Length: 256
Image (cartoon, rainbow, N blue to C red; front, side):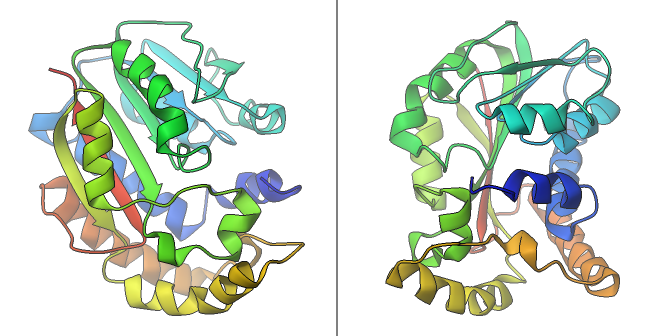
């Protein structure tokens, strides 16, 4: 990521409607009977960023093992301030991940593999899947549609955006059965797409000093309304409804 983006993420991810909506989607899915994990599961956050998801997973699941890796020392330093005591934090890369624990019940990788891209990440994902127990889950969230590439993507070093079809092929390629696959931010998609048009134009012209979407955070009232819409969508997503479009792709694969 560009300099300063990890600090912005660390400051925003606890309260920003987008991050809260994503965590809500994960929580609602893991509460469903067909996706429920064993008590005190073994959990790995593959690309843990600045730590809010580690804290969330620790509180939600009370795991017997909670690990998280990231390729950025800056991200890990920020993550250590939020991660639960005893979390196993270490530096590694999604393309060639070090596994310090096996027999995992859950691997999450939320907005990570779009940076190196699917092809570069495939061997790493295969290794992560290999560490899952039978019945274990891999949860992915990915940015959608190449045509949405914008200034935000320049700032966070996006190499690839995804479609549901491409995500299905990725999960099929590592031998997982698809338990959930849907776009996210369906209701908000027209607004998101329109808001990105200026950044899309700037990205295609070539630019320096690109800034992510986190440089313009909505106020509390607007954030509350946006989060309420996401929670409504998440109820459908958790039940297995496939939303037809959106700015993210959300997927859960199960190891048989």
